[in-house]
Length: 357
View (cartoon, rainbow, N blue to C red):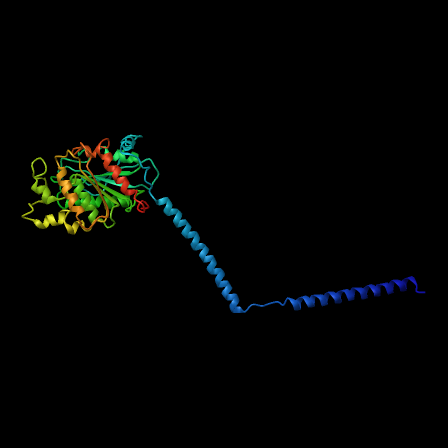
């Protein structure tokens, strides 16, 4: 019979043998698993291709983030139009709220080379409306006394940035082409210097002689204004000269500097109804004259409209209005005929596919 020490030794040997057997079994099992699931070592070219794909994926993610940021910025840059309303509602809205005092900005060295900015209370960006006064190009008529004084505050209350443009007139360094050159310069200057504006969101409103300047400015602009609103425009200079428009009948003669028969070349260059000028126009047009206008008679505007309707190349869209009972001045009164004209103008700006500008 074995002693206690020998039993312990034998037991230890048995345990060791069991453990060795268990280890061998485990190793065999692991070998089987390794053989069943072989380890694949990828080819170096495959590794390189995978790394390139991951790099391209990271770049695409960056491009997508940048494009999303650009799209968000573009959406924020779109100037929204106010809600649609009727003519009577417009007249009321033109009077709602307080109008801030305008800022006067010079765009040239001459005393008449300035504009007044009426900013709206809504956040920018804004649609900008440049307002060009009439007065048969004469020095005595200016922003303050040419009957347009209600328009800018009314449009600012409506949510537009309204800009009244002053320019050199006959008797103060103006005439052809200086008066129209000034309007061109004012448009360029305000786009570059008034925050919240864009050349793609511009409307020109011109009354009487200012209607002529608005049409010429639109034809000369590098980027066409979205819309021109020509109110009782002295558009056909030859016809206006023949009809002796203005108190003394010499307004067109004094503006151009000569009669049409003596200097037809000047009228070819200064008249927006001439085909070589009109064909450069790429703006939409709203044309309007009051039925009681005797200064620029409605018959002249109708003749102008019919000529346009007969196929002169140029603008994409015409809207024509004749505010009933309005004379030469009430068509630019925000509480009277102007509301009807502006309702048509906003309608053009809302045309499907165009108000993204």
